[in-house]
Amino acid sequence: MRSVVLGALLALGMSSPALAEKISLSAISSYLNDLRTAKGEFTQINADGTISTGTIYIHRPGRIRFEYNPPEETLVMAGGSQVAVFDGRAVGNPDVYPLKRTPLNLILARNIDLAANNLVVRHFEEGVSTKVIAQDPDTPEFGTIELVFTGNPVELRQWVITDEVGSETTLVLGALETGLRLPASLFSIVQETQNWD
Image (cartoon, rainbow, N blue to C red; front, side):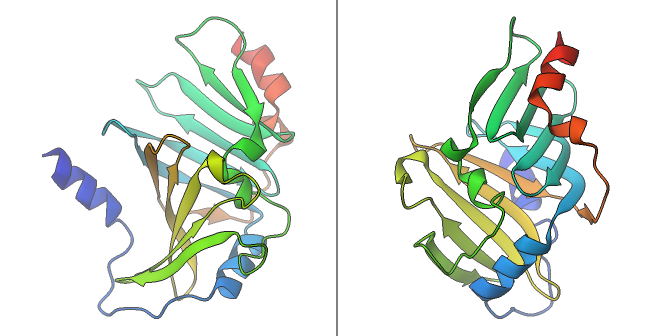
């Protein structure tokens, strides 16, 4: 049953009557650079096969927030060049580490040019989607991010983060609402830490 659920989730938003042409790296870069603010629902497939859901907020450059739905008691956010993981079951301040230690840093950068700087490991077409696997060439040990796009118009549909030990976390995105005014407080680790207490 789990394989049926996972298969359905991974196919979300990717159905099309015909195969699509591979989207160029320049078109993908332009799309990401134009994606300044966004909000949407997500489904996360964790490395152990469990599934989580929630709402994602994006405010490029450098800011992202994952609010997980119950029964999860987790909040993950990036702001001020740091990532914070809040766990409602843990005592004390959140775990905080540099954003540059995660492949998400690649899509939250101020100016994205996937065709430059040896960021892209693979760029290929698969069915109706275009996939781009990227990593920071200066710190490949921090893992990779596989971005999945559909075209007409270009849209980010999911990503898969592979960490330094090979564990994969897949995030399937619902429809993104873009061009929003998102308050800075959504991405303030300091403020969230005060509220979390």
